[in-house]
Amino acid sequence: MPKLSKEAKQRLQQLFKGGQFAIRWGFIPVVLYLGFKRGADPGMPEPTIWSKVHLAHVVSFLWGSLLCCSVMALVMLKS
Image (cartoon, rainbow, N blue to C red; front, side, top):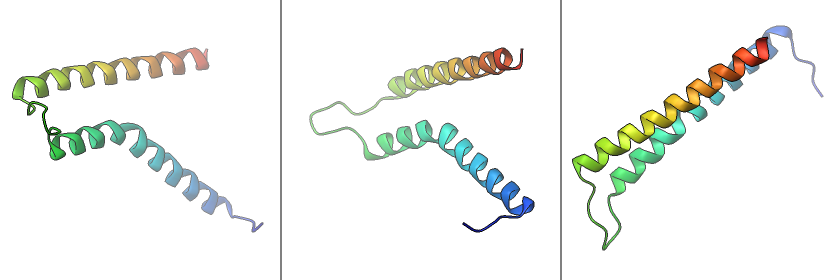
């Protein structure tokens, strides 16, 4: 196993943190984008503006809950 310098380890850590951030915060928007881009399945009604607004509120609520839980977990870990 090759030995890594301190700089190389720090770069790898930054790379992994950036990838982790992109996956955590980018997964849901990508899934929603792909779903709306494809459109409705045959026999299903097309998405309307109201369904998109409602979906945006649901996603916003879920993200807010996730953020709140994450902050609470960090506060609990620090104390």
